Amino acid sequence: MKRILFLCLGMAIMANARPSLQLNTERVEAGKNFGLQMVFPLQELPENRSDLQFTAQNGFTLTKIDSTDQVIRPGFDDMFESFFGGGGRGAYKARIYTFNLKAPKKTGRINAGQIFLTIDGQKRAISGDIPVDVQRAFSDDALTVTLKPSKTTIYEGEQISVTLGFHTYEHFEGNLQATDMSTGDDFIVHRSDLANMKFEPVENARRELQASAKFAWLSPTKSGSLQIPSFKFKYTKRGEPKIVEEKKQMGGMSFSSRTVKQESIDAETSTQPLNITVKPLPTEGKPAEFSGMVGNYSFKADFDRTELKVGEAMTLSISIKGDGLPGSIVDPKLPDFSDFRSVPPENNITKKIVGNKVVTTKNTKVFLYPKKKGEFTIPEIKYSWFNPAKKKYETAVAGPWTITVEKGENAPEAMFQAPVAANAGPAAVQKQEIESLGNDIRFIHNMKGSVESPAPYKSIWYWVLFLAAIPFYFIVTFAVARKRKNSNNVALVRKGKANKQLKVRFANANAALAKGDAKALYAALENGLVDYLSDLTNVEFKGMTRPQMKQELESRNVKSETVAAIDSWLEKCAFARFAPVNPSAEEQKQMLKDVETLCENLDGLK
Image (cartoon, rainbow, N blue to C red; front, side, top):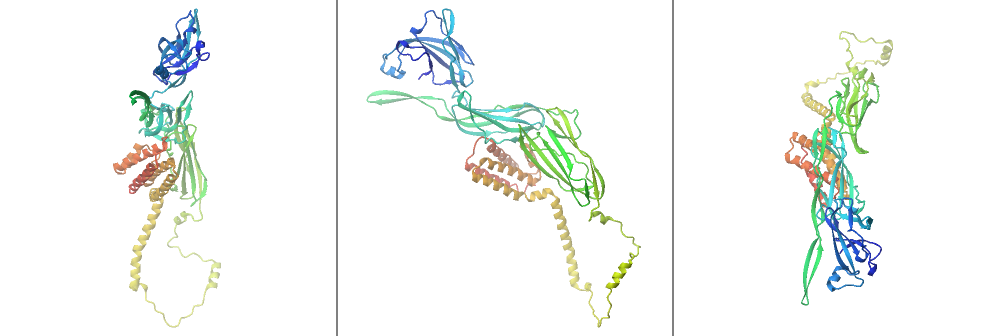
């Protein structure tokens, strides 16, 4: 059935028929040909006229103009006329002009142009703007996905963001799933959660929806021409219409019918790969203290006290904050603390999205105990980074500090005091001490009889107990020393608590599974697996690329199939967390079970 765009000056009735416009198709598809028809009653055509002219606009292309004279019967459709034949009431003769046009690639409600007629040498517009709804072809993708970087030329280690965009068309039916969202091996990545991505109607195209959000923040690990591979997705769309003809026999008569059917089909789409140019850092002006960080950073360091006593502790607090490598900050080079006893420092790393970047903050506490009294000078601490916005290196300085240490009440240095001379006599006794001793003297009485006690060393039990005490002493000494050593061994303590911490993480995963929160479940699984690896090895796997993780695990003689399984599950968790899809409950339960089994096989990792 033809689609009428508008009627000029009312309905075409009897002799009062007026020109009208209509399309020769129900659907105008992007990049395809269609016909725009003007029905012009012959009696309304001026005598001194030229042929109709069409001025195409906004990407529409006019290929040719056809015309034919025809009898128009208002109120009858084509099927009715073909069945009964003849003319209807109010029939009139009209000339039908067909403007054969090609639609632009753009979709939406677009002005196709205007129609002109030259009368008595004067060009007149006989139509206003002609809006046409251009839709995506059923043969084309029903979904387009884009990946746009914030910058395409950056420095090595500089942070950029990539925005993931979706655009659905009329024949999109859903079932969107990500099949590959890998950013490659050349970037350290902090991914965003796409759970809150919202689809909004496209302006001038109410049957289309679009959504976009920051997908990830990346920092390249090397210079050169790098590429982010295509992201791949699968979905369901409505296929092209197919005409199905059916023939039926009724009462000796044969009838035929034609119906249009469209079936749902599976489809795939992908983003274009991104090419990123990564420049090496300049060598000119590079300071000796350069940390390797690239971005806008701040550095602070200070002691909580500069005056203390032997046996007391002071704390060096270091805070580094910057928008470079997501989730990782290199420590500054610390001065020589040989005059102090130290314990393993405490580190706390946090990531937060500020504006359009991921800002990483690292707070470190170093605990120092002076070995002796005196005045000590701790040199200044420098921290340098490269600022890509200013294209130069920057350095922050903290210190120096002067530390004053006084003797403590139970100072360890007392045990190192000079011993008493071997030939010195007994210390002189003061008069007051003699008087005190005199008051404490008791009279000595002769005891009646005699008491004989055998020497203890003559008893065999004495020697049994004596000999037994020797190995017992060494066992206790060894146990105490080992406990002290282990308590100071951060790696060993951390490994000992790994299984306990893993149970806590799996408890969080089970809680998320019970609530039906898929995003929280996969976040708990991913973080739990990475943290468990870190606890077992005392190596921070957070912030590593997957190839770096593979290399680290292989260096620890982890089986290749186990390394591949770890890499596979981390990728699956990332897909489930950041892709705009929700896996089924059974898939979630199975992944939880598989990750638990994988962690059990890692228990012997060193």
